[in-house]
Length: 401
Image 1 (cartoon, one colour):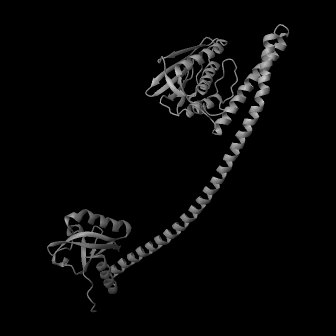
Image 2: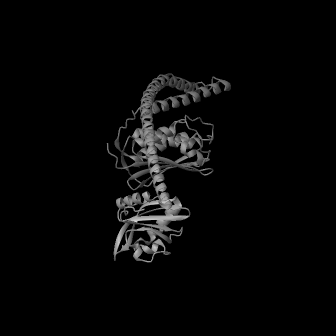
């Protein structure tokens, strides 16, 4: 049967090791060389040696390989050929042409021959086309699914924005009502505290021991409630964004010394000594003095609360680069490591008990932290169970209005 000669190309049948067993067609001059029994890798240029081995590996691994560019010495020059191959009956069918278009034309010519090996390559090509089509179908389906998920995500983001706006509105209402309630409670609590204190001071010789104990409980309870109300007012202001700082150039060493003197008298009632030491004779810094005193009051009273009688609380002031650092160190029971992360959060209490049963609002340290952050500073604690705690306040010295 006379057939039109195929386009320029070569078709080889090789064993699974890539050794040439048969030349099916050769339009490129391979027959000028003795190639039977030789590996395909010996027919390519040295620069394509590794790539030709990978080509054989891909055919054996995947059943077929297409569009591999390998350099081959032809007619005393190096020519780049387009190689494809497939497995058929434990053998490798390999075809090559100078270009991809010529390779496709060459394959069309071979397919008309109806050769069994060529039919295997035709099946491999069909399988590849099916894979490409299925891949395209998967891409379309994936694109549709991504579009659907993107729409769902957009809807969820809109819903989340609405919920966040509603939560913000409700939080503002909560802070408003909390401020009103705390403000209205402060006056009667002030009255209860003052009258109970008057009774304790002026009527101790008139009242019997039982009634004095009752008045003492009233005084202690009103004092705690007033402190709680004041803390709630501070929290309401801070959370509503109304923390206003009246910044002024202040001698921090003098401020701390004055604050320690006030707290020293209160600590003495419990038999606790408060000492102040400063590495700076004078350290001027732009701060809200009243707010920083509130921070010191919280830290020092907190240290007194957890210090045993006869112990010492150290308050120190130093500098670290462009920052002032305040230390408040106690000799109390220390705080477990697992509880340190929650210490500055509102209404958080540790498992450590006050040494004289003092009550805590759970807000003092949270307020102190917010005030320090408002000064662009930092506050943290280091503690070891059985060895006490040290609270640190870092305030930038060069703070501007």
